Length: 321
Length: 161
Figure 1 (spheres, each protein chain N blue to C red):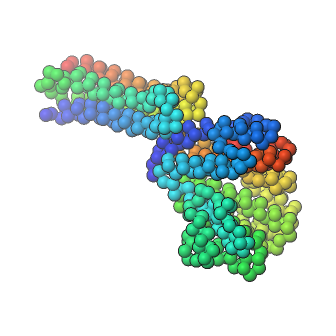
Figure 2 (figure 1 turned 135 degrees about the vertical axis):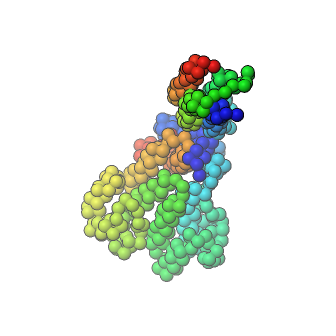
Figure 3 (figure 1 turned 180 degrees about the vertical axis):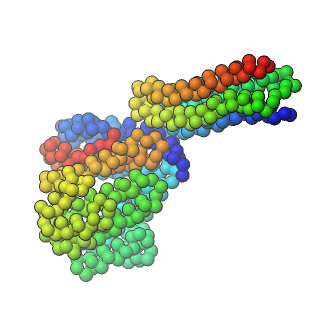
């Protein structure tokens, strides 16, 4: 693939970036008096929000974003290292739905590499071999854990770890280094978050080892050993990695850490923002739309439930535009 | 045909050919970026068209050098001229600045212009800056054109033809 194959795609995405909300617009929305006013302003920006149901409008925004990206990408499979996480999420909700007997469809994440309905059907029929190869091992492990122990958290952990490992392994075969950087960053940030949660919940070292995936940012054995020593040793360990500010964010609150992690991802993408020929602008746009949708979900849910503006603002992410 | 004339024609062909290739490649690249923007916002057609035209000039400069070469040497028009291989090689060398710089400056200018299309897409009011960035690359194509013209002129005078 030539380094200029994304010229058309990047230009189309650039033109679409002008339709994303800016930080100032989001801030103004946060200060808007009530849900109705927020919804009205968002309708002016193209969101088709009807009444109190904002989910359909947000899902449509995500679907439109993926329709654009898959339309302009010379090879949409280059995005698989990003999308595969949604497939693992769909696997997770499907396996859990087997035991809770609830329909997982409303929880499906899109866009994804494989049709969520097929994943659900194969999970429900226990046709492990018919699942995509990447998902088979995680499905078997999670099902075994849930059926034998009912330990949902461990099942989640096993699937999340497999998700990150596959994202890294797919990104390694992709043509663009930014995808591997993103997958590695994601694995590192998630590993830190999960281990800190394990410490707070008093989890055993064996659980921690199953929860963390190998990544370039730190040695898995060392970070698990630090976590096993306790919160102080663990945070000190984190302070000596590239994610040092994450230690303070962890101490502050889980929401603060989530915000920090998103900021790191957006920061990584912003570095490739000026490249008019590479995939970075497309990846950036993908994450920007997702971040915008996530922010609006937090904002609209907060407005509907009468949460204070400051609480809503604290949970919102840094935007890419 | 003697070897001198062969070198002269080769120089003219390379000046027009390489510069033309660079321009074709460049305008195609900027065209792709421009099409991306116009497909979302047709009102920006005029602004992105200016950026697309910028890398086209090298092809014209190359053509000019080819015509001057063939005209100064008398190959185009009167005909029946003869040059030693050393004289032919000197004319060939005179064409090289335009041929080489023409190709590379067109491609590089196209990259700057395609990046500029991104500026126009997001901030249409800043299109003047985008055009300036790309236009600066033109300087080196103009310098190469100048060198080739001066060299052709000097050689014509030197060989008294």
